[in-house]
Image (cartoon, rainbow, N blue to C red; front, side):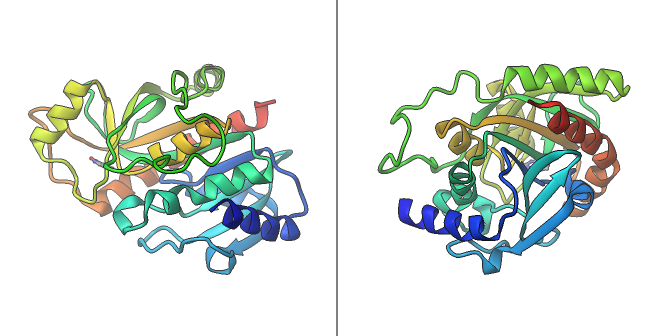
Length: 269
Ligand code: HPA
């Protein structure tokens, strides 16, 4: 696997004209940030050796290199979800490649169901911490590098969280913060499952992000993450959820999430 990671990184280095330290996973809510990347080089996942291909509607698969403001960035347009059938090694492969490319900070977004009764549909949640509820661990197996038993006491960078809150306050954008629980999907939760996750201490639930964050932390990359609350799993008001409604709520929140991320990426040292 190490060889594959290096081969992929070498291939990409041959196509890159920059040396970005910042990577972005353009999950739900951040799609339009791709349009703000200038001097863009686009590489289809299908053309990258060893890269998995993304399959889900609404997630095209491309790697983008370019500038966001005056920062060199690499962005993943489309991510790999465990529910699509990929192994955890495949889901997190791009993050391992990012490390090899010299990435130091990773910015991620996702859609999530809110379980904190104070949350409303369309609100943004800065991820303060996560709970890994996936049935397979991305670091299971031979330890390729880093610690065998990695520390997770600050999975989400405290300084970036502070800075993001400051930016939100300056721009008059309401944000909450909370705990994201990552689960395999593809079913949305039953009312009892939402209640269980709430008892666990989670504020929001989604089907992504946790694997990539674990691998990023394992290789020393700092992480910042944000969720768009697209539906509610709050006791008494659990309503029917559909992929379309999730997309609709996410699109409405997109400009606010994009503003915070753009500023944060620009101000990060
Ligand atoms: N549960 C799991 N994943 C999700 C949800 C949800 O309610 N909303 C968006 N992604």
